[in-house]
Length: 267
Image (cartoon, rainbow, N blue to C red; front, top):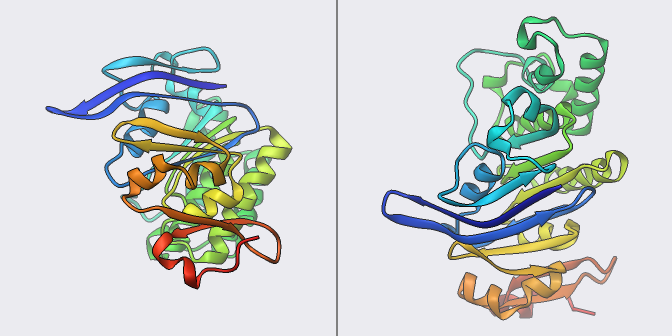
C-alpha cells in the first residue's frame, strides 16, 4: 500500500534523512521508533505528501502522494501531526466532522448527512469523547484534545493512518485504548497505520512490525521484541534495553537495562 525508497531530506545545510526506506501493507500496524532528532516526524510528513524529498520516491497505492489532488488523497490517507491549533471555538463534534469533508461533494460548504453524523458518533465513541461532543475544543485538556483529534482521523475512514505521537498527553488507559482501536480498525476495515511513538512498551505490545529510525535511515526492522533487543536499538538510544514478557499475558515490555532489576520477571 505504501512504499518509500531512498528518502533524503534536509533543513538548510543539515541532513535529516539519509536513504530512509520502508513499506506498510494493508492491514498492518507499524510503529516507527527512534531517538529525538532521528527524522521520524519529517519522514511521516514526506509519506503524507506534505514535504517533497530531496531524493528518493514515495508511492501510495501506486502513485505519488504529492501529485494526487489533496481532496482525493484525503479520502484515502489521514495524517495526525504532533501539534494542532484551531483559530475558532469549534465544538468537539465540529472538529471530528472535519474528517468527513473529503467525502462531501462540495467540501465544507455541504451540510453533513446521516452517514457523516453516524461516522462522527462512532469515532467519538471509539475515542471516548462522545460525552464531550458539545464542549468547545479550546476548553479541553491536552489529553482530551488529543482524543478528539484522533476521533477526527478515525472519522475520515481513510485506508492509511499516519499518526505522529498519537498518545502524547494521554494517560495509560487511554493510550492502550487508542492502540486497541487501531487494531480493531486494522482488522475490520483492513486499514494500515504507521505510528510514530516514543512509548516503546506500546510499540512492543501492539505493533505487527517495528521500524527503528536512527541518523536518518531505518537501522532495524522486524518483530518488535527482536528490534528492541538489537544492538542497533542500543546504539540509537545509547543504552541497551531489557526486553521481556509480562507474566499475566505474555505481552512484551522493554526498559533500559539499568532498570531491569525492578522489572517484572521475564518468561
